[in-house]
Image (cartoon, rainbow, N blue to C red; front, side, top):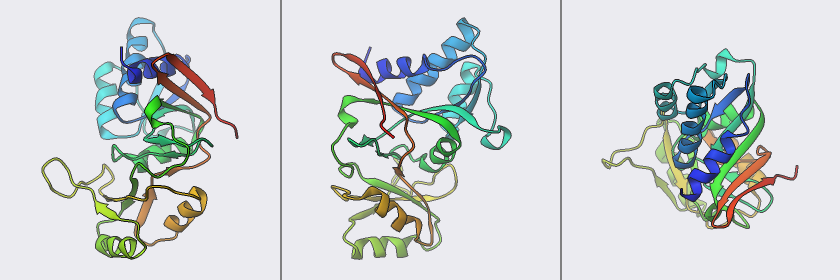
Length: 225
């Protein structure tokens, strides 16, 4: 069993009967969704899932997990998702799987958020992982020019065929190669101020628990808030 799978299975153990559960997107979250599907089938676990991408929705339906949309539930009890980087003060970068907008919507309406990662995702400061910025197609090149002028080293994300990647929400993604983000909260506010930016991959002051798959086993860390 690999580190991501260990973390995913451990995270699924936090799901209890009657919960409305946000189901994350990505390679680590996939293991968590598989385990929840197993519990629904074999243990009679009764939950409602709220998915963060078309891919997770397809997976959950195949596993027989009952689903509702984010607008069909009053809140989400618990969201479990992966992360691309988690800093020492429990801020995060997400969006490597191009689902950051839907992931942040679901996380924002959740009472509790658990992130599941392998130990390679834990860093002192954010920024080595390229920061995804989800933007509307109209005027996206103007944002690329702006980010270039600012020295943010932007690249427009392409799909496997070499075409511009389009998110589930119909947007494009510009990845910023920043190396280090000294002040994530201030930088997030700057990005929020830009016309044409729909959302960014800085997930700030959201996570309550981090579950880490390590060579020595699974470690659960409570975020200090």
